Length: 224
Image (tube, rainbow, N blue to C red):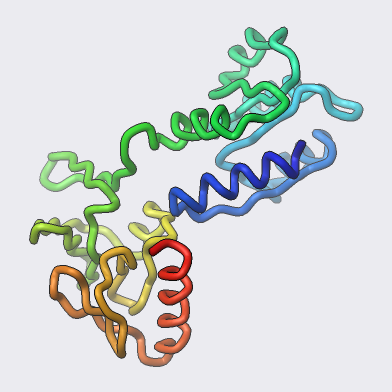
């Protein structure tokens, strides 16, 4: 079951360009021990109810009691525990045998992909939600970043580029230079620099030129 779920998750997360790592535990007790000690800080937990020597719902209750605020998705082969799942604030209840579409729908809701993924930021008390696919590249200068979007739309925000990179957590974007983050879907040509679809030229860190171009070519082969 865990291996099937892992394959479905990998397919979904790759398709959505989300960076991820997946840890699989054979027992709930081993998982909870690592969580309690701080060895893992999961964003989403898929928890089976019937586990060797433990109950998945009880583990979820203990996690919530310790302040876990991430998403919990219950997996089981019975509908009998839906109310208990609600009590641990589970965001999903997935029945076995697994169906990829059921998992995708749950992840759409949990990952907020029901419509389109956005980058959210504030400028002069106004909140903007910019579709990630609209971003061409992001340029850092001192303590601010300029977000270059399609149709020559530009936003200037007072944030570090590294913080925006973490917020995006998106495999479409590559840090090609200490001051530039590029959406590879918007690259027209890669030489010793990136020529963007909008016509702008973005520098590539020359010390890593070969590696960055290889990453771009692998991305093109997989997604374009």
